[in-house]
Image 1 (spheres, rainbow, N blue to C red):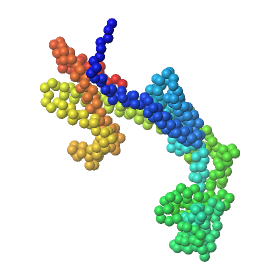
Image 2 (image 1 turned 60 degrees about the vertical axis):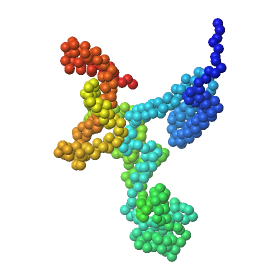
Image 3 (image 1 turned 90 degrees about the vertical axis):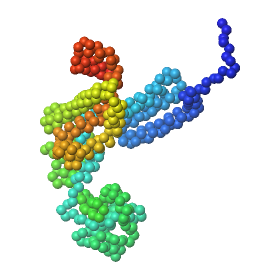
Image 4 (image 1 turned 180 degrees about the horizontal axis):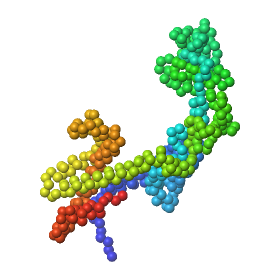
Length: 446
């Protein structure tokens, strides 16, 4: 067997752009890009693990750290068995991040008491209860306050509203000031020797410091700022006993204990607010089934959810199929232009369509009520609001079904409809036996 000689002047085709790109990124450049991306990923993972550990979220920190190590293993170990994983890992990461984790998080919430008054951790709830229990005693003093700084430390320059005497309040306590060193105007300190007043725009940056600055005035009382110009003396009505994890009312002696459901509760059933998040097992599901106050609205919302989904899709399909049949006539003039106009609602971003419809459905100034001469509360009446939701959703979605049904109708062989008419089938029978079945069999597959 002899080979055919290749002519010397035969031109060798240039490699395609894709082939050149693959060759370029398969060498040292590709390795460098991979290492840089992995370095960025590891830096983000290191930061995330630190944050999670600081919040004592051990399982999440372990999952992030383990996933990062596995990704490094897949992309750095030169093993042919790991090549398929190099293509699967990116998709798996996004699948876990945006599908699996949200599902697990929502399922976990269903077994907790997470709700209004129970959205804090236990430690945060204890601090919040202590703050809520603070009240001004009957003989407590109130002061006109002027924030100031002394050697970089925030202090409170106070004037007792009852006596007019000046004081300085720090974290160490309340001390009197010499009237000779203080200038008072309109009941407030306007100047003080050794202190720099915080004024103007500087006041906007000290809100957090003022709310946390407590000036002790006794064993269980202190002065705290209330705003930017007033301070009051407060006393707690509850004291927390860490030894047995209880709260005790100072006046009545009533003890509040952890009831195991995310609240401190007394023997009479009185609970302290706020509570904290905790797992309650199937209690939420039992409440939905047995408590009418929860069951009735839940059933209404549950039924409406399925009704909304079914009616929206069904009406969209009916309108889309009807318009597709109307515009499928071979001799129809300006058919392409009409189809283009019908697809416009699908091309416009949904949030813009919603904003436009909100204006059209305004009960006072909306175009729909003005055109029809009605005063229908489209957006404020519960029933009409449901109708509005379906109407707007149908407007946004019917072009999709119009395109699907148009493609399905154009795929139906003309011989089928002609054969049906020859067999004496009427228009309704042709639609039901041929057209509708063709649209159903041509529906998009996920």
